[in-house]
Image (tube, rainbow, N blue to C red; front, side, top):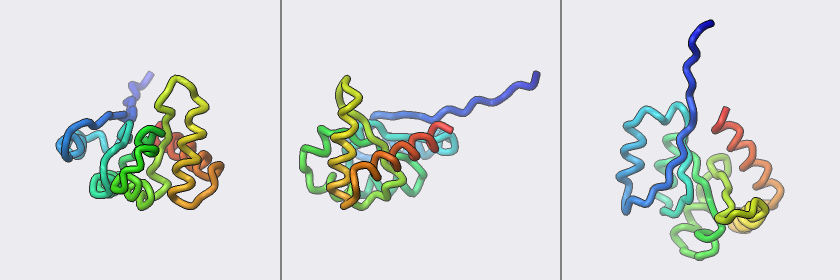
Amino acid sequence: GLARELSLPVLVHDRAPKMELLELLERSGNINTGIAIHGFSKDLDYARRCVDNGIYLSVGSRTLQSGDPGYIRAIKETPIEYLLTETDSSKPEGVHTVCKLIADIKDLKQEEVGKIATENLMRLIS
């Protein structure tokens, strides 16, 4: 049979202080296979740069509940089509809390956030 190239998305937890890791990702060539930033916890400038590169931001409850104004603004202003959800725990139902928190920030319905985040994930892995 014919050899087939396998392209998988990259999931990265960026704990670098500034944009060093994002710059590395931009140069890596993985932009075309899909990238998500796990545990997104940075600011609006970082979020905008991710969106400009087609990079998804995965959001958890702990950072949302921290109430950091810069972070909340980043979530508010990031298009919902670039957000993913994560539980921050071993309990999958924690994602419902994340959807509710994002919905409150973006003035959407919790179910709508869940539906769109699921569609985003499907787009990332397809």
